[in-house]
Each structure stands twice: as C-alpha cells, then as structure tokens.
Amino acid sequence: MHKLPRPASSIRRKVSFDLDNLTDDSDIEDYRDRNKPDWTLRGAISTLPPRKRRNYAILTILIFILLYWASHRPQAPKGLSPYLNYDAIDWSRYAYTQYVTSEEYLCNSVMVFEALHRLGSRADKILFYPLGWDTFISSDTDRTSQLLVKARDKYNVILEPIEVNTLQNLPGDASSWDSSITKLWAFRELTYRRILQIDSDVMILQNLDELFFLPSAPVAMPRAYWDYSNNHQLTSFLVLLEPSYVEYRAMMDKVEAVTAGQLGKDEFDGHPLYDMELLNDRYSGSALVLPHRQYGLVTGEFRRKDHRTFLGNDHETWNPDTALSQAKVVHFSDWPLPKPWVMWPQKLLAEIIPRCDKNPGTPQESGCRDREVWKKLYEEFRLKRKEVCMLLSYPAPEWPPQENKSNRPPAPKDGHSAVEKSEKAESSG
Image (cartoon, rainbow, N blue to C red; front, side, top):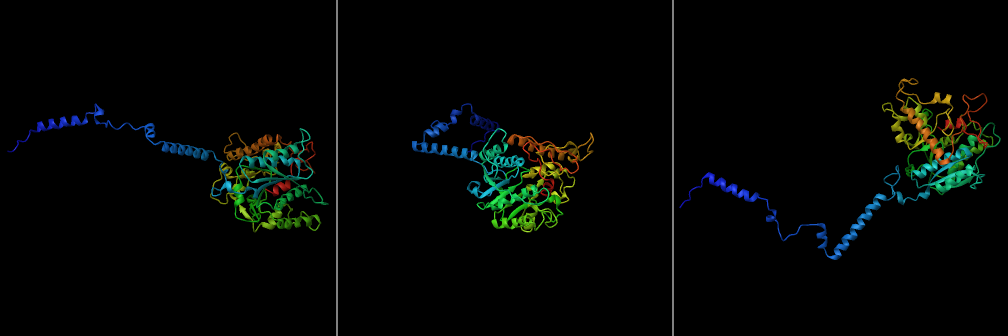
C-alpha cells in the first residue's frame, strides 16, 4: 500500500524543526566530551613523567643561554669581511704603525690609535718615536711623556724608540725630508706579516682591518687621484706593506746616496725626494692599488667643482654626503690652508673655504653642503684633539706671509714649530 505524499507545508515544518535542534548552542555542554579535560600547559606538563619534565627544563634553559650568548657575543667591527672568522685570526701577525719625529705631531698619532681602539681593531699598534723621549712624567706640563703613557696604557700601543734618520751637511731645511723617510722604518718589523702605515694628519671613520687580508703584494696604496695626469702616481699617506729588510735596504740606498752627496735631495728624477717618491719609484708598476673612494679621500675634494677625477667618470653625480659615507679614512689636505691642529688665518680662510653652488658670497647663496661637510670634518678633528690630548690648536700663522718667512705660526714655548714643511704636505696629498 502506497503512502500518500506529505504536503509541502508539512515537510517545511519538519526541516525547520530539525535545523533548530541542530543549531541550538544555548547549552554547549551538550556537545562537549565530559571525559576529556581542557588542555593547559600546566596540565600537559603535570602529565609528563618526572624524567621528561627534567629534560625539558634543562633544554629550555640551554636555549635561553644560547639566545643570550648570540645576542651579546662580540661582533666583528664594521668593515671586516663577513667571510673571515674574526675570532680565529692571529692578530699578532698584523699591525698599524705611526711615526713621530717632533712633539707637535705626537697628539695626532695618539688620535689615530684612539680611533683604531674605538672602532674595534684587534691588530697590534706600534708607535715609532725618537730615542731621547721617555715615559717618566716629570710634571703636569710634561705632555710628551703623558701622551706616550696614555697611548701605551689606554690604547695598548707598543712604544718603539728609534734613531730618527737624519741627513748631514745639506743646505736648507731638511727636517721634513727626514721625517718622511722615517716612515720606511715599518719595513724592518719582520715579525709581522703585514703592516698598515698611516700618516697622522687623517681622520679614521671606519674599521680598516679588512686591508690586512688583501692579495699579497709588496705594498698597496691609493692613487693620488687629484693629480691623475701625473703618471697615475700613488699617494703614501696610507701604505699597506709586507715587511722586508731587502726592500728597506733597497730604498735606503737611495737615501744614503743623498747623504753621501752623490745625489742631491732635489735632484731625484727632477723632483724632491720624499717617501712618496721613493715608494713610487720602486712600486709604481707592482703595487696593489687601493680604491681612493674608501681609502684616499682628501678634504680638498669638497672645495672642487669638477669631481671627475674622484668619480672616475662623466656621468655620475657628486654627492658630498655619499662620498663621506663611503670613505673609511679622510686625509686633511687644503694647501695653503694649515692642517687642522693650526688655527685658520681668517683672510686665507675666506679664499679657501668651499663655495656654495648658487649665488656664492651673497645673502641668497644656497647649495652649500660641500662647505658644511668640509667644516664639520675640521671641527670634529679639533674636538677630538681636545678630548684625547687636552690640547687646543696652535695660533694661526701670519697671512699673507712676509718676505723670507715661511707660512708657520710662532714657535710654541717648547721651541718646536707648529706646522710641517708645506711642500711636503702638498706632495703627499
């Protein structure tokens, strides 16, 4: 017997009733497994056997220790190659060197060592200084001994007294010539694999340790890019060298020829003989060339309007902030303006200071970023000199210089001149 089909209205009522029952969540306990408790971390741990709980506790502590160590372990200074194991390097095989032949430059060298120390270099630091100096502080005004002791005790500098090379029976002032030749003493440090010799009239902005691991070469130097037409000459204010007594003797043979009168100091291939000329004469064809953007920037670049020799092309746009951010070392060179430890002659400063790009010298001038960066470099050097050495700048020299007088300030009370020979400063960049 066939059942009669239900009316559509009856079916709709049935479905509606069933859906109401299924979606009624007013009492959620009806759908919960009453035999299964809520999961909690404490509950989960409490159900573990005692041995497992102990093992998990030890593992958690070890993880926290490793995370703390990873966040606080010493990091390789900025600039070091990420492919080097910084902690595995034998840093006693590498060294930075400074040489000082007069008291007025000692502070500059200590400032270089302060920067290396602050920037995290682990290589040795060596200061060559005259035999007649000592580390006995005789009084509060004995600045030479004080600075030597500070370099040794605070910045871990190895003090090495040497007999400064001198020339005898030469006319005129050979002091700058002698001072530059003393730089070559670093070639005698045979216990080191590589040495980085830096002039003291610089500001070190970033760590330089990566230079020690460049491919082997007798020397590595930047180009004197500002005088690129001069046969691609190398500049010696930063020299990475491999110590060799043979190389040292080869260059000193040239020096001894001058001392013996066989060669005049102004007759070496038609130009004055300084360390820069000696190094170029021997290594111009074999030196490893360092990029000058990082290792050879001079302050005089901020006074130029044509930067093609620095940029190396015609299409790139000069940006003083970019140039400074890329530089790891800056050399102060703005001849005839004195070095930064000597106060500026105001008349000369007006001639030398970088010009603005638009409407220079007028109340409407603009585009003066080169000037701002340039002045900031000098200001930072002077502030650091005061902080490290507690010394102020020497008085400004007379300008323009009088006839038969060099561009030097009056000698300070210790009897030493305040600036190096200008020709040497210009020739070395």
